[in-house]
Length: 151
Length: 128
Image 1: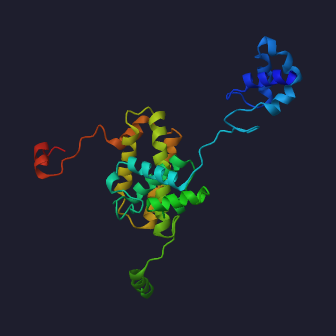
Image 2: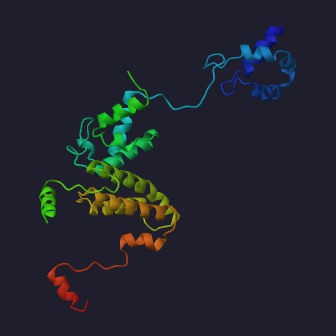
Image 3: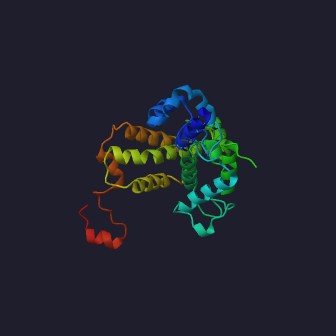
């Protein structure tokens, strides 16, 4: 009998928006409808174990983070940023096209491209290593090295 | 006299002078790239701080133009000196020791371009 009441409480309160932390328990208890509130105080500790969010497993912490990087996503982002650059012709751009020899860019243009990559991926690329990155393929390799992306 | 003749003959091969900052051309070019990065990142802050009437893109093009003016230099000491002057300008711009007029002087807005070919000089006259 008490277990059935508990099941009803769990089903009515187990919505995906609720978090499994103790701070929200007070809210949950206060938001409980009147007839079911008598079960809240005695069953509080059991709720933590039994209530589950349908989409995620039991007691799963949900931190905010970016989606994980893969080699394909890095390559797509690098090529997208390069296509947006106005001194590069998007049709002639490939992963193996050299900036200076194939695309006819300057060393300062290459610096601008590396800075755009820094802004895109959010980490500093020191100049000693940046001056060696002359093709989009090398840029992808370098970022994969720095971000520990491997396959 | 003999010593100066010897140094002159040796100077034909390679002259060794005391460097300012960088020992060879690669290091000097690295300094130039660092300076260009700093200026590139500073331009939007400058346009906002001084309330300039130019777009960020025009500012960056102007920076590129000034850097390209000295593209032909090969002496590391000269490059170092130019980098030092560029750094001084950058410091004055970042700390707002300059004013709007000093920055807009780069754009030569109020100056008329001087005549270069014969006919334009003829029309302008001999007064200036």
